Amino acid sequence: MLNRLVHRMKEPSAPEATVGEAVRAHAQGAAQIVDVRELEEWAEGHIPAAIHIPLSDLAIRASELNTNQPVIVVCRSGRRSSTGAGTLLKAGFTDVKSLAGGMLDWADAGHPVDRS
Image (cartoon, helix red, strand yellow):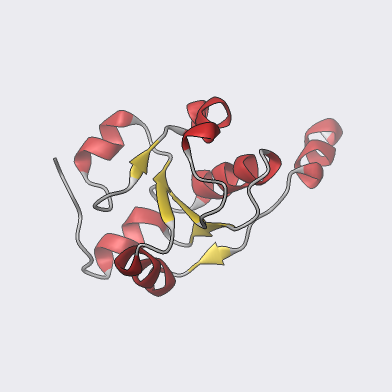
């Protein structure tokens, strides 16, 4: 257990973006929105134009993202996105945020959800 705690302490942590910040960045094309949920969750609804890379694939697929553009990582509630943001920070990304409240807060605020 102590090893897990020490390992977690070494994980880089990313700041959170509010839904409002994510909406503005999304509308302006100022950030890559990366959804780290599983395929079934993605199919239930996601942020339009988001990039789908499941958390389990993120470390090996990080090169698909633009390191020079900010990234907002999203999941269902914000827990996995925080882990995903840490993964991207370890991969060399410098401007990464986790969406606070995830898709639950995004949808609750009435923002568009793509189900295609």
